Length: 277
Ligand code: C2E
Ligand code: MG
Ligand code: MG
Ligand code: MG
Image (tube, rainbow, N blue to C red; front, side):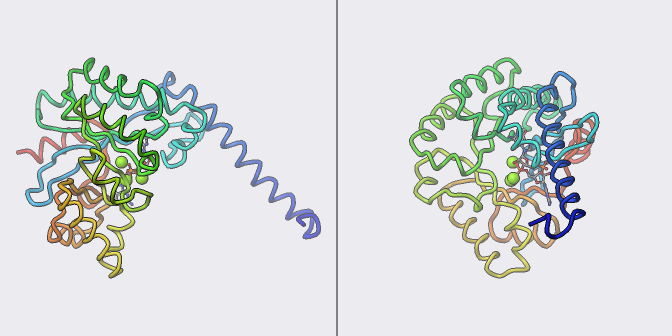
């Protein structure tokens, strides 16, 4: 036991554990007031058409600036928000903010589309589809300009996802499966659900040229997507070589640090203005 290993070990261990518990409590509580304290903001990362290099859309990514802890990664706080339920108001804030921003950009860039990440917990809310519809109506953004990025875990409940996806189709929004290849979706699900896009997970893209089998998986996903009439987006492109290989394999769209990092709205607008000339 820790005691047998000596008091110091025990002490250090419990201190670390305590620090962890204190941090998660600060995150938990901080999230509850993050909206009213204006600590949330969105950054935007371009998605380009790999052949023409045109920017076709932006993905909105959430950022949280905690008063004391500084900036916290969504990878850390989204799971906390999913647990304590704050993902519902926060997710609504993300959707509204992204749509309002897009509407503003539309006066200069009328074709621009936006993709918003949606957690499974939000989708399971009774009236989530109505929230989406209302947000679009209030902001004046056309449904065809909005993509909801969802994860494969949703596919496990086939009946439920079928029903909700039908509602999304009625509204007219696009659906994308995020981090494709890391989850549970079976091929039959892909053919029966009304999905528009697959985002190939960045772990595959980053290994595709180093690891032969990973390269084959990427090619297989691209061929499958093309055969099923799904649009393919490669995530996490970090090098020119990856971008070229993906283009040659027939992947239509790409996103990643090699193309652009995510930026706050003003910087992103400048990036887009330069690119569209
Ligand atoms: P995601 O939706 O798969 O987003 C892609 C993540 O990869 C983003 O991290 C992005 O900054 C990062 N990324 C983009 N290009 C590259 C690259 O070339 N290399 C590497 N290494 N990374 C790249 P971020 O912003 O930290 O977000 C992490 C995850 O948090 C997202 O993964 C998404 O699942 C979740 N998330 C972010 N914003 C929201 C939100 O508004 N709502 C929900 N529910 N989840 C969100
Ligand atoms: Mg995403
Ligand atoms: Mg992803
Ligand atoms: Mg992810």
